[in-house]
Image (cartoon, rainbow, N blue to C red; front, side):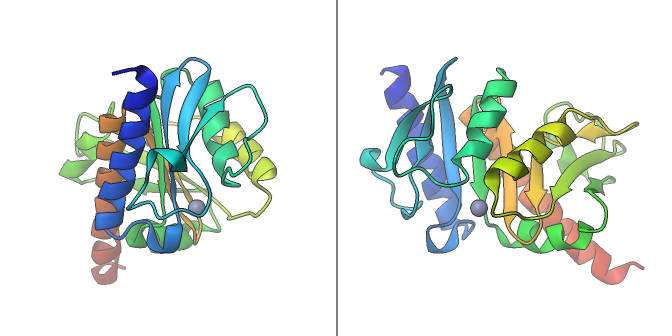
Length: 206
Ligand SMILES: [Zn+2]
């Protein structure tokens, strides 16, 4: 199978998995997988992510303007791929726990996770005692401006913390990535579940 066909197949599979879990309601979310150093496969705007066809996937060159039919948020994907050659897949969902949890952080610019065994599912996290920093950005319809804020924040590590392979947009959803589609899917599932844990835990703790 060609790298292009494999990437398109991985995007379709990621959309189907997210849809089954109700993470992409009403055509929301977008999914991309790197084909090579210069090109990614990415979902077009406005399609049902649970029933993607190959024609719903655009083959986007990273150094060229967004193709007709692109999602407005595609720029958040292409900017990350250009900056980080090790990223192989980026999945974005409007999942319930991430979207609700993100609103608890608007006045700061990050949320931290610690004390959870499951955080070891995140690349580079070796112990439940690690502090995992999850950047949070105010939502913005100006995707260019948002993309520049994301780029600046992700370049700045937080002292004593490990950066999560993802970030939250307040009241909007979660972006997660990995070196491969399988790793991005693991990170997405781990983060959404950790946010569920945090929401439950905070109900019972001051
Ligand atoms: Zn979105």
